[in-house]
Image (tube, rainbow, N blue to C red):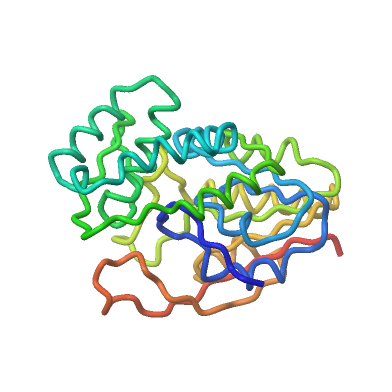
Length: 272
């Protein structure tokens, strides 16, 4: 099966891991993703229905606008991908427009523009909720038309929500399976990368997520697969799950040389 790329650049995106993830997901009618991100697992899996959640309201808003009127959205978004706009002054003007806008359609179009023109495809906000990623200086940012079309078509099978992960677990549909891609436990004190949604995601959240996964699998019979860094802490947190380790190339660093392999853990909670 040909793999499909997400139309957004996304730190921690799961494109390179989708085969490892999908082969571990038990069969079900509905796939639930409490931490959807760019949607690589959604795009490269085959379920009848999807419940796709993320705490980032701009992300979910973009997906809903694309699902609602794909042709209009793609036409309007393409207008921003011209040479004139691949410039620091233009980028900062659009970023300011985005931060001041209350219009959900305008914000969705600008979010896609900033994702492709901003530094390293990052998505970051300050404590006031102001998007603050600097200009990326790319030769010619790619306009992901085919990827947008594929996403829009497949999203007709999806329900998008913007809730906390605890709320998602409280309302799991019958005959579903859950895949969780939470902000990862940092490999070092300096590597904490959890600022893409306001409020962050701390160790209490990591433990709470594991508790919810346990309850979902062992009390309700709904299997949960969680991915994270393979560390002493995650092994302790996920001790009730069946654990697998896989090696992954890390590409968050802009310097190619520091993209070394790290171990990731796949924790499957499934009724015995």
